[in-house]
Length: 346
Ligand code: TXA
Ligand code: MG
Image (cartoon, rainbow, N blue to C red; front, side, top):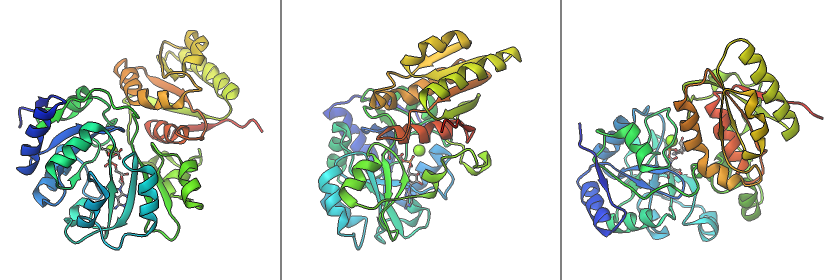
């Protein structure tokens, strides 16, 4: 059990974090996406601590963070040429690349695979910290396994207080959902997780980008049990996918039917849908439907907010799949544990 320290977002905080990381301890820190739970990626004991602090199963590999491209040589081998192109366009930033792993990286980081996930974050505090420690830092999102990713130091403490040495409090993270994960070891670059960098942007640089299994699991046909239950609120949750008018109508109808059964219904909706509020017992709004970046930045805080009010059922609608909306859909779909209703309008 630790007395988890909250460190200030300044040079002294970063210096204290650096000392702890050099000693093999764990420090949570802000990135532009979500808070990461950092430990020395080259120290197998520190890596083991990350898995146990999170309660994360050993088969789920970690992302290794570095400050600059030159540091990748320590953790990777045989880097494909396309990394240069992607780095020039998207790093530092919310893109994670899967590439061949250097033997210097303990296999546990990658759950025994011969690949490794690498990312150069752009958040100024993450950059300051990575430059100061000068070692690669393995960092999953700083939440307990299965919980919503943290977008503030308070979220980190809610999950990990007493389980880690410290958290650097850098305020709310700007993007709010995790990085895009792109596998460069597949025959064609493959999107494994939609995130802060859109599929459209990747295709502009790479031409062809394939969709990984998780990304294709977009339909109602997928049995809920096949989806890992990530980002899951305690309440049952349903996500409606389709055109705005059709999904809005579905939300209103479904809410009325559930309330007729005596259920407390919560709506997780864009600001534009305020008129639906009377159909439910409680409403949490996400931001303007035409500003998906803003919705992404608030999404996890909003999920925590609605969950805290413990409705029996949460109903949400998606916002399409263009740009970051694809990542929002992915996270909502996971929050709903695969309870997805596709509303046909064609
Ligand atoms: O934005 C982010 O990516 C945040 C910040 C802290 O950088 N980190 C994050 O880490 O979301 P985590 O551990 O919650 O998610 C890492 C994702 C998982 O879906 C994992 O399966 C995938 O990356 N991943 C990691 N290493 C991999 C590998 N070698 N092959 C395939 N997928 C990998
Ligand atoms: Mg995570």
